[in-house]
Length: 578
Image (cartoon, rainbow, N blue to C red; front, side, top):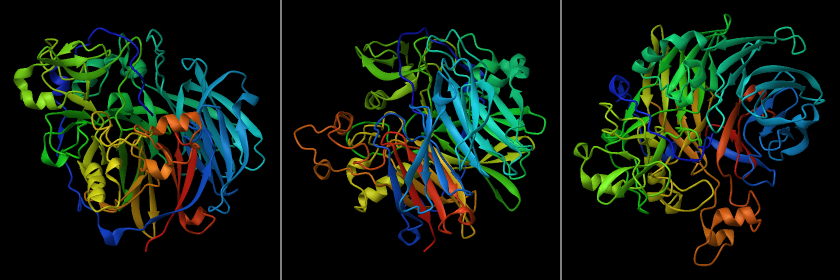
């Protein structure tokens, strides 16, 4: 999801000692190619696009597909509805109708996710307020009749069917309210749909049994730090992947930089596994962290918490592997904020947590080169991680997200990192620019702006959504980049050595081509005012991706469906090898 906004001052929470010294720093993996391979281009071809006509209202967030009716279902979070698209001809997706949750629930919160299978679509809807239990609504994909609804945990954020179709899993994030004085527990609901969705049983895999293990989990590297929060309250399930045998769920705990391993049959959390830390000072983990209107990817004295948003699973030679999009997601509430901006005040460097130009958290400058700190002014950094000796001063600087994707292998002891893409995403975009295949303004631009380097001090290209699919016997990871836009494709058939295949991005990065003139053209203002139609600049901010295998596709070729939340567009790509 997009980051929350800083709304007020807070006292500094000190987290130091073993938490930041024990997690293994990633040096794993090495891509077979970091640069564009011309011969491997051409897997994805855009064949269809649907425009809702709504800008910046979360009108297209999460897509899902039902093979029985050849329909795509696209979540509109703002309207608490689901657009139903006929894609029997994917080159001409057409709106059939919209499922409106307000017809059956008087005051719902946002719709957050949907999953379709065998003629049924399940929709996850938060309550209003979101600190109350949410609900799952089941609809017939053809008639769009409501079949059933059930109450689940707090803030259901993602739903998915198990591969065998016997269960529907729900990640209930359990976020606090803005003042952080109500913090419901996170959980994973397991809904047994084996007897039909009219006769379901709901079980809950909660985290209360880990409440007594708070310090042990923190020492392992699980980030548990919300004010006055128990383990169960602090853990926030975000996204779910399921093993091919439908026995095990791997649940992203994004804010906690961890994965929960869930036994589906027992409805029990088996383990909580930290994901570790990325060391950006290593050459292969270089990044552009500076907004200086130049492309300057280089190592920096920074660490990063992966905090993936989405996850998918696939199988190689009978072994399960997990793919994550390492977005990063700092907490920012009026009652608690964990990040700020690196600033210089009267010759001293520190972190400003409330945008008043004053240092709230000092930095131990003896650990850094002053010229480097000066160059990094403006960087978004953690204000609570990196206080190694618990003295109220940051000895290390942490940023959010890995600007990468990673492949993990579940083991008997937890989860091993087998590949981390390092600087591959940013370097690939830079390489495409150097070859004239992308304009320079595309590098680390914002999702609704055209400004070179704008996101370099924040999230970079921001990998967020991921879908894994097999095309003609080859496994691919499709990675949505929320800020710059587009989808990056990797061959992941060999998990230890993924290969870059293709980057597709239909954004228009030229103000003149968009008809915006004048000394300071502004894309966001033009879209907000209606000077430009919502989808006129191309797809902005891909949020959710779903892969349709060839056997389920109306074209008999695999499809990738991408929902873009800012432009309100849903784009369909055909995936064929050439």
